[in-house]
Image (cartoon, rainbow, N blue to C red; front, top):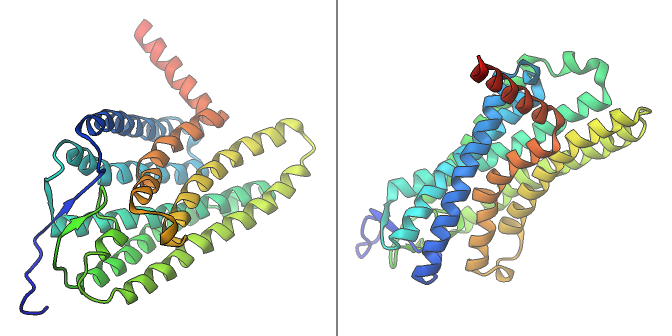
Length: 313
């Protein structure tokens, strides 16, 4: 750092540049979304843990997806709510980078988990007789641990590259959380290496996994069309369509955010895009899986039935 630069101790998150009344309205709305996100994903985790019929590899992966969604929301939404009430409240430098690291960890992990879930459905539908041997519990645990480990390591690379940069001038982040690209705009040095690594990571963690998911589901589609039983086709379509909805929401918003030309997406639009994968997707995921998945709805009915019986006794 040069002599005229000081050590950065905090940032100001500008959040949404709106009037006080609209900010209070957003505070109430986002608080409601946050509560529903926690309740919805918590319900999924509870049903999977309590119902033995859901103790299968598919729901093991789904439980980790629910954990990621809860972590997503808890990492970014509380800070956003605080900023809506008190826009000038700063966040420490260490806290900001911690938030960046956790956000990237959860984002990378979710990408890899969605690929793992696509592989699980591919084996279940295209090779049903070999399913229990190919997707054993040991394989499931290995895939999940690998997803978390790779997600954390990739996030650590981004944070280490940010730490090497000096920051000076107005330390105001034009975002509602410490999003990587917004933090890099405040650096007083060349961020070319950071940009290259971000692009390479997007290719590795977004484009690559999305291609694998699409290949898996193209083969799954052909396999479903060959199923003779109409009930079998409906069940397969129900399970796979839920996963495809989640994939479309997550990968679509992330690719537009990080790989589309930035000139087409002003900063305010980027904040709205960020809301999709930090708040709306975690909120919608349990709704998609519970409303479109017969096994989850069945588990919910059985849980309510048991609760009703226990109250009568």
